[in-house]
Image (cartoon, rainbow, N blue to C red; front, side, top):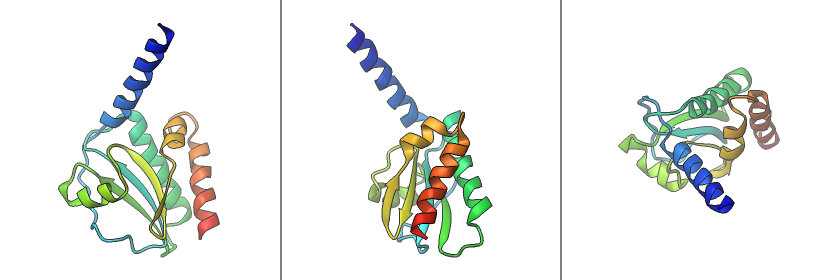
Length: 136
């Protein structure tokens, strides 16, 4: 019985994260990112509180530390926008995700981002900075 409850809880959490969404309209060229490092926040049309927090922390980290560095970018990509279909497929994105793309290779920090964005945003910010700083 405990296994069934655990399975249902995990399934509900995964489905919740997958369906989290909030209205936005952004599109990105499907070409390779031009910058060496791209902090990339993928999301759907409608987002939950945690999804929004992940994007906000990632964008704020970029703006506070890297906005003047031409080799580093922040991209906010709406995967529900047809124009972004190919980039979502390339990085195998089906829901909200936070990737740091370094020379075309993605480091996926989605799990830790969702664990920390709301209650421990500094932990997420430090992780983003750690990855970007060691790669720049």
